[in-house]
Image 1 (cartoon, rainbow, N blue to C red):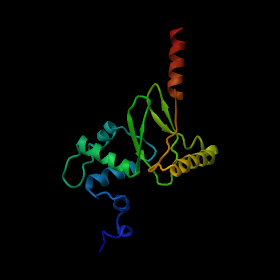
Image 2: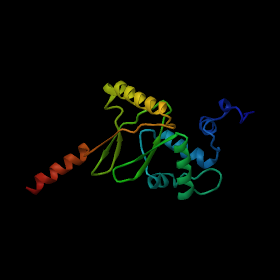
Image 3: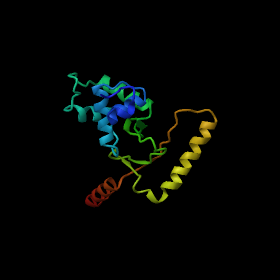
Length: 172
């Protein structure tokens, strides 16, 4: 028999929810498992709601936008999700691995696609992690709590730049 007071005996999603003081509802399981299955993708509230429309919680309730908003807010507060606000002030949510202190990403100013840069920056990952650790330690020493670091590079992605160049060439 599984003892709910012992997180080690719970399913991984249930254990994560319990460890962070959250209720283990069917909706919470559904949303957290979705993010953990798509760790390299960030979602707006609307994108997440659309993606989850066909996957209703197994408790018979339908997933509405207010419930989803409140749940992703709670998941963000306990650092299971990372919330970033892009250049257009749109909130994007992504799974936040506990070991990650810096989450570098690229935001395209044209198509608004948000892409993680971890693979591209692998050669400098240790420098980035060290800089993030130093900044967080300094802020923690000053009394700040619940810290995470968001490194956003903004510009035009290669696809949009190529499309713009092709369009400019076609116009001439």
